[in-house]
Image 1 (tube, rainbow, N blue to C red):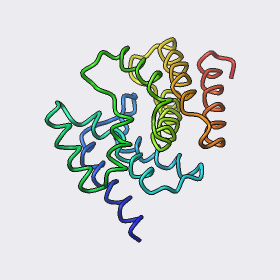
Image 2 (cartoon, one colour; image 1 turned 45 degrees about the horizontal axis):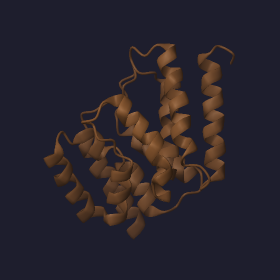
Image 3 (tube, rainbow, N blue to C red; image 1 turned 135 degrees about the vertical axis):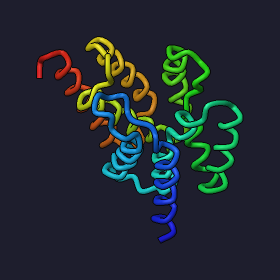
Image 4 (cartoon, one colour; image 1 turned 180 degrees about the vertical axis):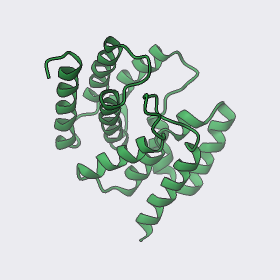
Length: 188
């Protein structure tokens, strides 16, 4: 029961932090659906590490709800106190520094992913799977086909640095990658 309690506490915390946010798609889907889907993807592929599932639920909290360095520190302290060091470190590993330009953040993800912890690598793969699915099923407003294709290719570069820990999830990423490109390029 302790594990389930920690997971639901994280779900509640994430839902409160993301409560006014929606995904970028035209459907204006509540943002909380994304971390829930990332956690579900991990579970679907056999991951049962509670700290990994909690990290998945919280993976965008720091990056997408803290507005400045002071808020990052405050939020990090709360995550540490409520969920422990393993969760905080994993969340911070997968959080981009929003003060950097987008292209630099994307390049850093490619470069840094091979050096991440195993938890963070698994989380990266599940996150990219869900992001690609969202690009296909509820594309971000105003994204032309070439931008969607570029994102999918970039996601593969990131995932390439995280492979080898969950072969079934690696294979599922490859399947989603191929099907998504076929659909976008009209050969589906």
